[in-house]
Amino acid sequence: MEHHHHHHDLNEASDKRLLFSVIINVLLTVVQVIGGMISGSLSLVADALHNLGDAAALAIALFARRISRRPANRFKTFGYKRAELIAALINLTTLVILGLYLIVEAIWRFFQPVSIDGWIVVAVAGAALVVDAVTAVLTYSLAKVSINIRAAFIHNVSDALASVAVMLAGTLILLYRWFWVDAALTLIIAGFVLYQGLLMLPRTTHILMEGTPPHVSIDDIIAAMESIEKVEGVHHVHVWQLDEYRNALEAHVVVMDDNLYHIERIKQSVRERLEQEFHIAHSTIEVETPQSRCES
Image (cartoon, rainbow, N blue to C red; front, side, top):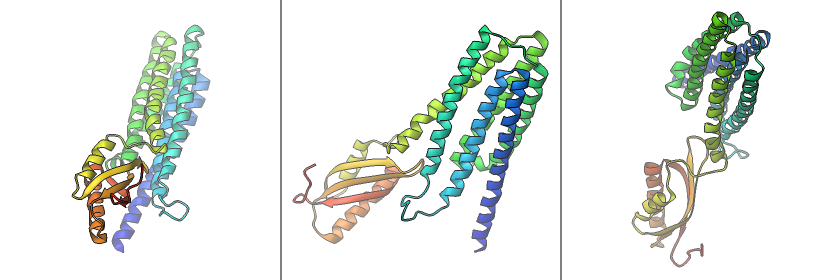
């Protein structure tokens, strides 16, 4: 009981750290947008978009941690893990749309340059760098044990680098009045945001479309199942991802035995092989005999 309570306290503490990270990143985004509008710097707005992506990634990570603790029920028999994917799809689609918008705006700035206040750019970007560093410290330990939070941590580190670049742009504007640097940097940041969104969108939609898990071959699965003693054939095979980490399978297996005890042993052997070799923990096996084999 003490161990469970201690584990609960750790979860609560890490959730509070994530929530604080989300709040300060959202506040920073607001400051960056206001600073960008006052100074005329489009790169600050682009960096704000990138930072908003970090806040969303952290919020999704927090949401996923909380909702994943909810048990499956009669309405959600597989649990609530896919809520994270739906949120990620919305987040990524928004990032792609805003990224395209910023690229168009940045190209337009090359033809119609705008006077920019370099001091505001440097000051806001410096504040952003401090917030990025604090967020990185808060999430670093959690990133070691969670792939989900590790992704958000990587987003945060990339945003810190973007803040350094914006500070450099502000300095060049102050020293040399190179206003074009702001548009050029906006193109780079927006391009990076767009790249991240387009890179992750196919994977997210693939899971939601119940696609075959990456690095899993249907032919290899069938071969492994048919190598088990007394298994004559395998057909009607479906493999999909329940969420980012869990794979599932359903298949019809033809066995050369009609003894109920032997059939159960064969099914158990098939399930063990699937879990060991392909990390498929949830499998539904329909057993058939040569006489009762379905036409498919």
